[in-house]
Length: 213
Image (cartoon, rainbow, N blue to C red; front, side, top):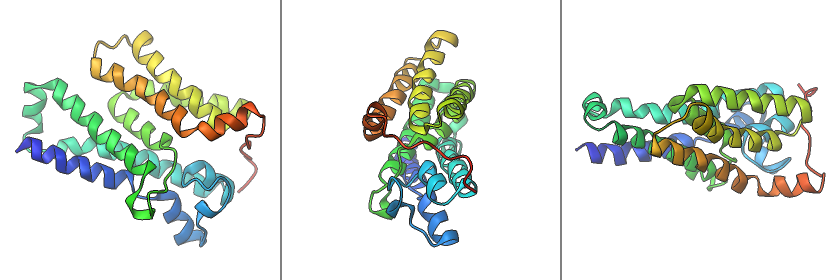
């Protein structure tokens, strides 16, 4: 019974992550499809560039919330406390499965023809749910790099590498599932930022403009 619920909630997690925050905010409130402008990416950064700071911040918070919410679905599994007590490793791995499903949903949203964002904000929400201290420190590094360079892509990549370093070296995690997942984070970032990396190397990457409303 529990295994069936896990499968169902994994699917719900995908649907949650697939909610197109950027497309929703753009079309409903600004009559703009952000995928048709800027980088064409359905994420917070492109929303920031195309529409402005307010819309970009709202999309960012919504995308973070999606990842966090998906992980918390485990609390709706019948007898989840028994599962935690009897098999804490399975409990944590189930949380990771829900989180990964949400990120996949953001990358390939069924609602918008599988054209999504880069998954970084949604991944941050997942990290906040499973290891908040490392997530917050990684996000602070992201903010520092953005403020210094104005390159959101570079900040995202650097922050993604900071997370596993914090998990392994600072917090000295002995959870093999968490450690493996931590190394998955920068790999995902590199994959989804391939074009950004090419532009960074050619010094053609677009910087964020903090002056836009």
